[in-house]
Image (cartoon, rainbow, N blue to C red; front, side):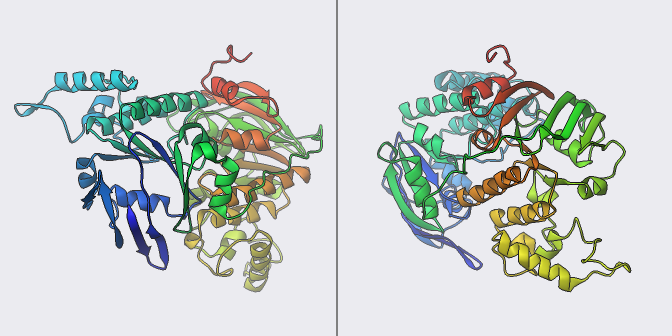
Length: 499
């Protein structure tokens, strides 16, 4: 790709970027959110048209106007959100749109044989007859890769491919990628996880603010150097200095069970406590009860058992009561649960206290002067980069949107903080800010519960880590001594292998 530029209203997403990938290599594309990675790859895959620049495949100039052109040129892309039809089988998803025909009918025998051949060749075993909705995410990812190989893709673009995998599934994916490159395939690997870049990639290209910063040989670089290239300055890990947690339990769950949306139990007899000044992490492959746990704690889902916050039983208490008595929530999705995207920054900052003095008079009339003053204070304190309190929340970047939620929740001086995937989708600088604030809460004697799919995050921040599997706690480990492999085994339900 030579001199690639792409503009959106008010934003230069790609600014004359040169990017080349050698056959038979795994090439990382890294950068903060908004750096231009996805835009560049969407141009390569035909989802966007560049304003300037040229693309060459095997030395020949290529016109890529849509994904069909890309596929004909041997380019395929596995998106972070899988593009699969839940009601169709694994086999039907793999061949969808390219079914082998016998007369006017789909040749199911030929379909099955071709998939078996591909599966054996690349070590991608799948159960062909199962509906996609019944297979785990690791298998769904294999299906996405098989879709591309079935269409004879030679260059595979993988967007954050390990985001929803256990460590063992990540190892399996890496084995597959290594086999692919030995067969002559080429991989472009988009990731935020610099450890993975060092483990699996041959080269890494860094983008920042839409510009090319540089390409390095991974063997000659380090994760620290890559992080510095990404953010333009040295990235520091959160301070490891910690004071012993209090023995006073601020949040206690006793024999909690709850049903999921399908009516089956998603949480089964969960019991644990979080002390003041302690960070407890919850690990697990997504879909094992984490979302239901957050909803139960928030007051959004009915449950059996007892939850106490600062010795108060919450069973019959309202969501407002929980908030007023010291529970703060960073929800899973800032877009659908954490913010009113059409509302102002100031409105989002006072949604949990708008009815209280000094923001509201007895008559119920809001004091916009006091609300604006409060918003300005938090914008400065939490470094929310917005065009003032009246800026629309939906126009902010992911990191600044998350800072609105942090500012709102932490400014209430909580007793317990429930943080669900607090840095999902954030770049290094924003992640570092969130981690600092969480550790500050710990130092302020807040009881902190973190639910995260990022094992590095859990190990960095937590004192103890609990592992959820099929709605049950299957293990508790010391974050200071546990390994990724041990957590991965617990996340897969293999408790005997760890004990």
